[in-house]
Amino acid sequence: MGKKSSQRKNVVMLDNDDTDSVSSSSTSRSEMIVSGAEEVHVDKETLLDQCVDALYEKRGSTREKALASIIETFNSDIQHEFVEKKFATLLQQCLNSIKRGSSKEITLASHVLGLLALTAGLGDKAHEMLEESVSPITEALKSRSDASKISSLLECLAIITFVGGEEPEETEKSMQLMWQVIHPKIGPNVATAKPSPPMITAMVSAWSFLLTTVGGSALNPKSWQGSISYFSTLLDKDDRAVRIAAGEALALIFEVGSLEKFSVEDKGSSDSSTGEANKSKDILHIQGLRAKVLNQVRSLSEEAGGKGSAKKDLNSQRNTFRDILEFLEEGYTPESSMKIGGDLLTTTTWCQQIQLNFLKHFLGGGFVKHMQENEFLHTVFGFTPKKKMLSGIEHRISGTEKRFYKSPNSVANKARTQFRNKQRMLTQDKNVGYYTAGNDI
Image (cartoon, rainbow, N blue to C red; front, side, top):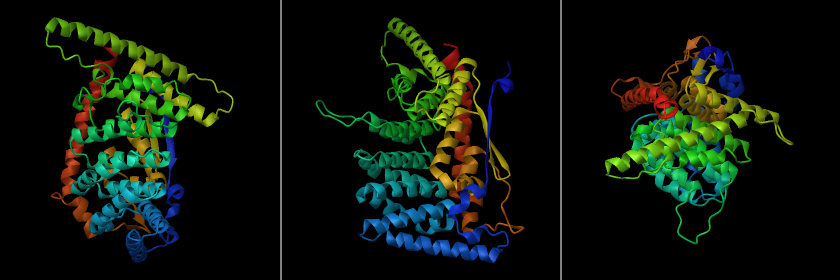
């Protein structure tokens, strides 16, 4: 049976009409001329300036409204010029909100930071964001009273690390901070609240999203021992979203390879005979884990609906675990296509699918706009959309945008080259990861 006949191709149709409702009605009129578009741009920049000023207000509700307006504006347009001018100010005010705000304010500020990173794109700004944000986000994650707040903080940390992380060590540090939300380092006789299913789902999804950017060979061998076993236990949980997130994490681990880093303890023996014996035990242990996961995945791919079970959620679970089962048994990765406007975006690996789903969830109504116009996302997915037209006139690129992305000597351009090289290396790892670490054991 060939790959084409055994795969289900998922095609999703998306258009501006579905997601651009948050933008000003004037920006959607087909008869708009370029001068009108420039007026709208000025109006949005004025609104953003007012929102940033409002973040200095003492009343928390005022800051919350300002943050919500910033999210709406960043979703409806790519705000390169505003970011170029007010990046540092917006970054610091959002961090202040995370340090001192209510749960709602922290949730909103976290989302703004993620949008700020995606808009800034690769380069010094994104790296500065990561360095400045890790400490306040870490502190905010210690208070686990609100699942929505924690989920937003985890998504924020994932996005700013995805964009701004330049070294594997930086990415792995963020992954460890996420892991500690569910597995906190606490002393003896210290009670800790049990994480809720939404919190577990958010952690696993954010952790997997970052794992897509580092090959298994780049990870610290002592950091993730037992993670396969943990995700395997999540497959038995009652919450369907938890099971799906855990299943995708496991599929990704098998795709990136180096399973020994996710499954067994480092014995650290210097004796060659003992080392060989331990290696044999490790191989048997991995084989046992893989067999257990395979049985769990097969069962979930065939699960019958129970009382109160939503049909849509059940079908989503079945489809996901059928794809995982086919991957584990045959080595075929799921292929899905998404039509964005008049352009087709195709994913062919678990890595790409997890990245796309995470960013689509995070951007929400701004997803299509960003996929059409955000250079960083074009680089991530190798996606080249048709040039957007405005009343038959090609959309004009501002001087700031040209300096930001088009100049061969720009920081963003150099960072983009580094990112592409990194993606090529990861692809080479994945081409051998499944068979060397999975089927050939």
